[in-house]
Length: 163
Image (cartoon, rainbow, N blue to C red):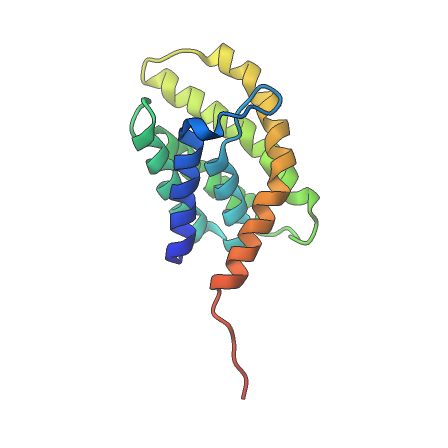
């Protein structure tokens, strides 16, 4: 994984955690790191998706008041599930990343609620009211995240030279 991809995820975490990005869509704030991790995992596979998940998740954990490691762990699990489920599927269809974002958002937030519940924090019912609108927002934003990931992949992937 190239430095540009890692820096992009750290930047997304800072944007997500800052007050600059508190522009709600359908009453929710998009999870940019989640979108980046899912898109990067679809484009580059499990290994780089896991690196992206750990980097973005740990940065989010360091910037948020929650439990250290909860975002990193949940994003690692999401990256693993996305890689396993999407590996045999054809990636040419734009509906594919959108559905992955919709279902992945629900799974990611259920994992976060379970982790925070195990660590003694509550708020799960309130969070459930946010998950469905957030899944719709993520589904709408995924084509942009996917296109950005494909563009970055084309830019950093080694080029084959002939002759």
